[in-house]
Length: 421
Image: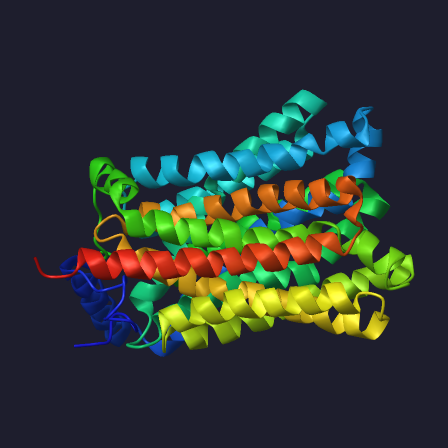
């Protein structure tokens, strides 16, 4: 019997449904050749690359969008919010409504919807239609990553579930290193619509790759909407989501104001900011790889290590922000420590969700978008209060430590619920 969870004595105690799921995953991993498994995970990661590119490229092209549509830049910023709202709404809704659908067909359908939303973005004739297009493009985001994580874990050999999940999420991290800078450069030179046209091409390529590389996945368990909605009644699902919201809120409080922090405090020139952002993206890539490896050995330790690591490096950044070299190194380390939690949180959600794994896995990305919005908002508050640009890093360290508190409460609650009467 393959190892299903690294923490049998904690809240991730394996349920019968999870054991059966892992058993089918191991059986399928033996049937699917290693080369085919790698091709399938690469196709799934390509979709993540496209999603990551479209999610973040808007931030660098806001002035271009504002000028093109004759609106102010703050007003243009609502297109980012529209996408995030689409993610938050779409993840649970799509996961529940498509519970009876085959996983292979669902992934392809989600990527078709994503590609159509980005095509609508390219063709949007007005600001109002652009808002609608960005909302539509965001709807498949969370469900795609949730189902892709389940498929990757299903195909993974024994003891490699979290690593496979991390490889899928790697597409999102690589987008920050390569996809977003390249699309932003193109958008600045050929118009902002060209950046989203690139995303349409990536989406179309992903559809082809998924059709060619994904096995039938007929042995993957499907459920029904009511079963999936049952995840919302499980306290450990909510605890895990809260860990993500609080822990990642700290990272986003830091990241949102990184540009100004580096130029005003570390003394970096504006031309050096893209290099710093690339270092952050490289940290995310490393974090996915390290996090997947660690989570396959001990889920709780991986989450705890990510939270504590994030708190430490954010605290150090607040102290060393005026040293340019230290600031650049710590920017890389924040990306690494924060992202290292992603495979572990995603895997823990699948473990504690019992037979509602699709909804739980998709909700992880709703939680991350809530963390993005909350972190940016709270970071802005401390700056507006006159505490300076060190304050978001201090705030972020405090939020990461708060995530540790939530994790401890979750483990204690899990042990109480499994204590014999």
